[in-house]
Length: 233
Image (cartoon, rainbow, N blue to C red; front, side, top):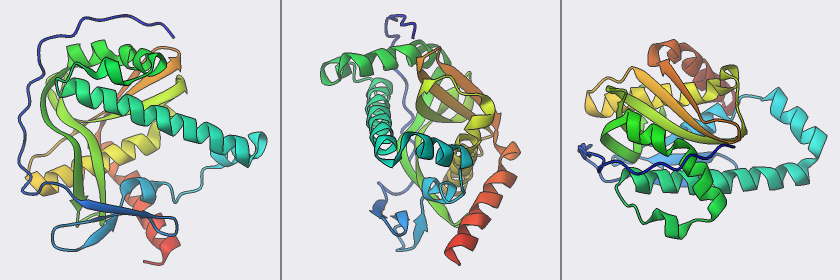
């Protein structure tokens, strides 16, 4: 992994878009996954819960190959690392530059991979870690970032990976981001067409995938229908 230290730019501009609510309560249970509760009392499954309902043959083969115990350890480490990197990025975009004191060198190294991408390509920030829902889709979730990217209002999702990923392996990311775009428009009236996935890679270079929302709405709806069929909804 090549690390390039990059001097922080000037402060990021925040619009602080008012959604009309502060946050959504969310509960996770082993039998039903994660659900979000709206101000009116309705509850919706999270988009990650919906997308995880579909079988993943590649993942299952990997679990069989390494064993369930080892797979659980690897997944836990990856999840913990991803959460930490998300936290740094959130603080950095929120202009809190004291983040370096809170994280271990390996986590900081992962962040430094994408720092220049954030500085150069992210513009005005509308929301971060924002809970959203869609009555039309019947799902909810928490978007990493809604901001201008290369001057275009975008859904931005941050990921981490040990190795570089082929674009074809990221289809669930694109569906997730399309869902956030639809939720955002339903809540605000502001359409978002551009979807951006930024991946910090341990053994390789950072990746940026840019997609269009409407290219992923049909696969998203198919995933939602599959989830409903499995859950008998």
